[in-house]
Amino acid sequence: MVIEIADFTVAAESAENFPAAFEEASAHIAGADGFRSAQLTRSIESPERFVLMVQWEALTDHTEGFRNSAAFTRWREIVGPFFAEPPKVDHVTIVGTA
Picture 1 (cartoon, rainbow, N blue to C red):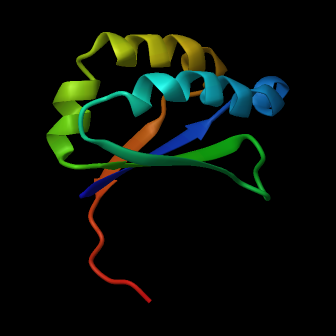
Picture 2: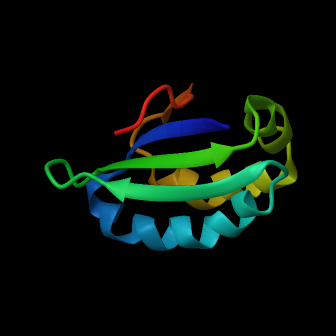
C-alpha cells in the first residue's frame, strides 16, 4: 500500500466551499483502479490549508492509472479552481505504528 499526501492551499474566499467540491470530485477518484480510501483534512491554524491522504494499492495506480485518466481530468476540473497555488504531492509508505 502507498499513501498519497496532497497538500492544498486554497483561496481564502473559497475555503468554506472546498469540502463540498471535494465531496463532488471524490466520486471520480473513488472509482479508480487501486483506490482504497481517501481522507481530507483541514488545518485549524491555517484554514486555507487542506491535506488529502489517499491510500492506493500501488504507486502506479496513482501516478500512471489515475493521473492519466479522464477521471483525473474531471476531478481536477472540479477542485482545481480552488487552488491558490499548485498542490504539493508526495507518496509514502508506513514504516511504523504506535
